Length: 161
Image (cartoon, rainbow, N blue to C red; front, side, top):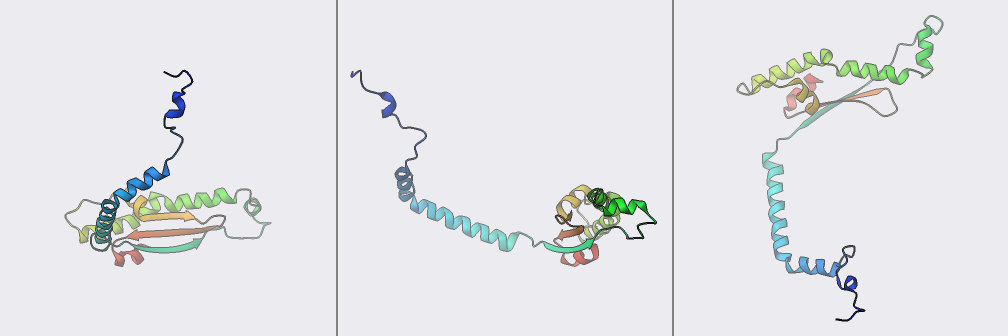
C-alpha cells in the first residue's frame, strides 16, 4: 500500500453538497413526484371546499383612556398625563376587560346558543372558548383596544360583539 495515500481525500466530505446527485434523484423520480403532488393538490382542494367549515370573523375597536378633568382638581391626572403610568393603566383596563367576570355573561349567551343548536354536545369550556374564539389586544403604541370574535355561526357574530 502506498504510504502517501490519504484516506481523508477519498471519503465524501459531509460539508459538501452534491447538487448533481440530487437533481438526478428528482429527475429519475419525476413521475412519482408529479403524481404525489397532483394527489395532494386534489385532496387539499377537496378538504378546503367541502369538509372544512367556514369561520366568520367580527371585529370592533374602542379607545381606552381616562376622563380629562381640570388638572388642579385631580393631581393623579397629572401623573397619568405625564405618561409615567399610562401604559400600566391601559394594561389594567385591558386585563379587566379580559377577565372572566366581564366575559362570563357573553360566554353564557354563546353557550346557550350553542346548546340550542347542538343539544347532544357537551357545554363549551370558558378557557377554550376564550383562547380559540376571542382575541383582545391593544394596538401597538396606541390606546386602541381591538376585539375580534371568530365563530362558525355567522348569525352569532354581531350579538356576541
